[in-house]
Length: 349
Image 1 (tube, rainbow, N blue to C red):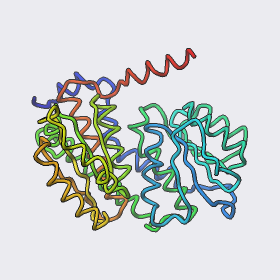
Image 2 (image 1 turned 45 degrees about the vertical axis):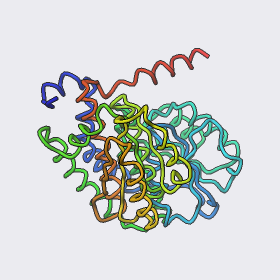
Image 3 (image 1 turned 60 degrees about the vertical axis):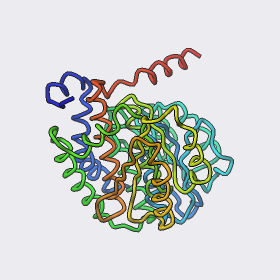
Image 4 (image 1 turned 180 degrees about the horizontal axis):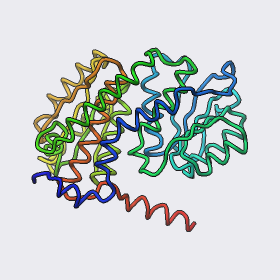
């Protein structure tokens, strides 16, 4: 199928194309919004950090956790549940991330963390989370609303970068935000070319198959998750992913008995120059082991200098791959009908 402006206008009722095109604009806007972040917390008390969030509101936390893995002196966890770990106490920095401010799992976790004396920071566009922040006088960063959380990644990530930067938990300079903005801006120029671009070419390869995403378990772990989430929500396709080296100890054997899936599996390997050397070698061997059963094995490497640029080079690619997959199947990328049905049924309980 040929992608045309007419097709985009016909299919994309929620303007996901426009939101993806505005990613650099969002990034620059939230950089300015958060450039003077002040935190009224006792840094000397912090011994661990726990984020609370779900779905598109949590992916920014996943990214900052992986990004700061080699620089943050404290353990960092992303909690996706109503309940919180027992270790959370007055020495915990608890960062509640809810784009709407009304995510029930995040709010339930927040109330528990407050009861245990944790220091709280909220990141939200409003809702109950903002109300709680004002009422209980804990720090919060208000971000713009009015879009699907998955399309607001700049707004959910950059505030977390600023928080970690203020706490001196990062080892790359502030200038990487500008560098990443430039990378995202250049990416939009490439991916907007509906006649020929890498995202469209990859979408054509993945179309009508089950994508399987593999990556290292460090910097690329949340990028792997973003690929899955974007294809699932925007393209309305099932996609699977796993991490290396862990999958070498179990899943790799599962490739032996898959005759019923012959010609249906497309493997995508996300690669970065800082991947562990042994993981790089493992990925080469995995490719050899699965290429006869897979429809194809596609290797994709990050671009950019800093870790931040490299992460977001593949985050942005995932966004546009999911967009083009939706268009190839004439699917509106914005509606999430099954999530809406699930929420409405839960509201009845």
